[in-house]
Image (cartoon, rainbow, N blue to C red; front, side, top):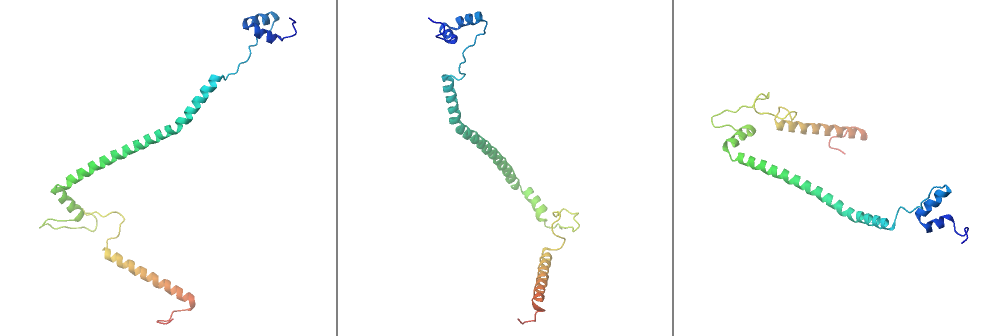
Length: 175
């Protein structure tokens, strides 16, 4: 068998790794192990299966998480509604008490019992409280009438300005 026919690497592959180590040590070289691909067929199939599972489960997981969020929100709303129902039941029970009804009528409607005299003080020192910054101390109809007068005055001024701009003062009853 001629020595030139096969390369050393080919002969060493045929002999095996231990024999290759002995040959390379004898020649003073280090053993080069043949490079193997890091991605084997099994690893590729496993990666493909894992990727397909991730893709297949992504949408259902997103739906699951969003539904859990909706359920939690609905539970919070139900708890809030329960608390409100309890509060309204207690308030309804209070309104069944005649003393509470009388107290509210005196406070908000300024009712008095027969024989009592009710007073409303304009300086705000009495129990009748007016919300801050709302209206004046005048009656509502006076405020309404003043608003109508202001609107009428501004309407007359606007008409006078328009007629002066057209060609002078308007004739009384003419065109």
